[in-house]
Image 1 (cartoon, rainbow, N blue to C red):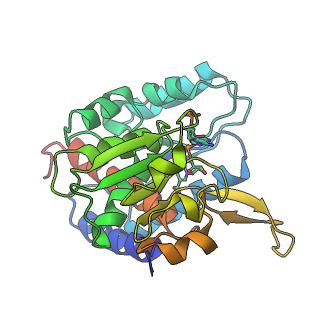
Image 2: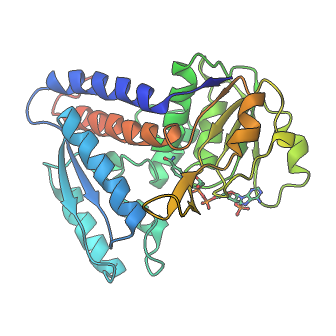
Length: 294
Ligand code: NAP
């Protein structure tokens, strides 16, 4: 069994982006990070994004409206960023408080600044394999992890567990693309899927994104499979200072010995999500230059 080191692969991508940013004409790329309220996980995610931006030479603009912000007020804030020519990318950290309509917020962001890739236009471009669009960061990160660790999915059976807009659906669309690095045969499973273990056992590459700690057990995995664990779940742990530890959707101790390769949690998909956000921000800057750079 080989561990896929997301920290190392993400660090390589960050270094590549830093070199690219140094060569860009004019001002550096600028990413607006919008975090509504003080949700501890969101605070931590936005901090990581801010740090990666600084490492690369991307300017970040931080906007932290209170949890009580109304939908119209958040729209007005986004409209301001859309109209600001100094801002290349806009990220609104999810999840949003329940009184806000997340999909409507994603749609409000100008498609050419939608570095999270959740706008209707960018999801449509993904389906059409139009590379001018922005691909959602976690799915793009999963594909990079596979490519950069020498896993070819072409002609192989990829089973995606989960059908969310943020992970499951775009991951399935990417794996299906008519590209040498994709070309997979894809099955997507969800909470209404019958006979789930029989399907997951057919996977050459199993991608778990359901948000349930340790859900994927050894009896659900084909020996020799590659397993990508997207899940980030907090499990109570009194031995930790925080009182919890992070764990994936895969029961790592029993599944890992079966696999040819597997991602750990933390240190697998998570860092790749941040790296892909940075990549999209650099792409946004390039595309927004007066003479767009390839
Ligand atoms: P989500 O929106 O809650 O979607 C979960 C999906 O899993 C749904 O499609 C759901 O099916 C399916 N599901 C739930 N229970 C199931 C079951 N018992 N059997 C089969 N399918 C089941 O979650 P998400 O946003 O995609 O996130 C999934 C996990 O990835 C979470 O742990 C999240 O924290 C993590 N995540 C990590 C990163 C990262 O950077 N590492 C980024 C994003 C998300 P239905 O559609 O039928 O409800």
